[in-house]
Image 1 (cartoon, rainbow, N blue to C red):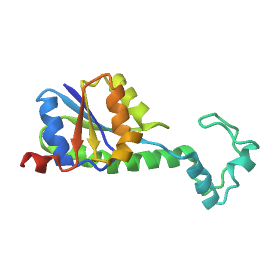
Image 2 (image 1 turned 30 degrees about the vertical axis):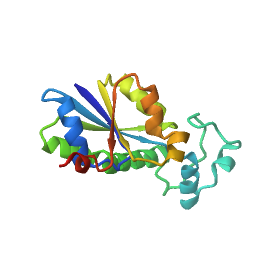
Image 3 (image 1 turned 90 degrees about the vertical axis):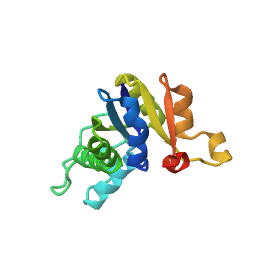
Amino acid sequence: MHVLVATDGVLDPEEVAAFAGPLAGDDGMVTVLVVVEIPRTLLEDMRAAYGQESADETFGLRQEVGAPAARAEQPKSWPGDDSVIDRYLSDRLKRGADPIVDFLSQSGIKAQGVVVEHENTGDAIIEQVVERDADVLVIGSYGQDAIHGFMGSIGTKVVRRSPKPVLLIRRGALKAVGE
């Protein structure tokens, strides 16, 4: 069975292994997904820190996110937008997925980490469930109060829209079960 675990980096690796491991089984696979929304204003702030003029001044008018643009010459110290984004995504993967992947692997469960950049976390999770043909989705639930639950957390939205079964792991679930 292919288990997709969506995390923002706060799921406890031991709790994930206790639930996702038996679901995956001996021949299964666990993919740990971290979705990252990169605010494009971050790049403007970073360019300014390196001494480059703002995107508005460089490109004339503000470009749509993701639209290619003819760029002015970059300062020699600026590593480039793609490089900055790649480093940021790599860091988020290491912080968010690696602890869970390492724990699962040490427990004898085949696991891999994946990071995806997307502007909507819920949509990205659903897309990854479909694209990776996951059999079940595991996601954290943090026991939010009624106001946050009513307004709709990412977990709530994903549960409503997931084409596959969803297992919600509440923080401290192992203690609640008596382990």
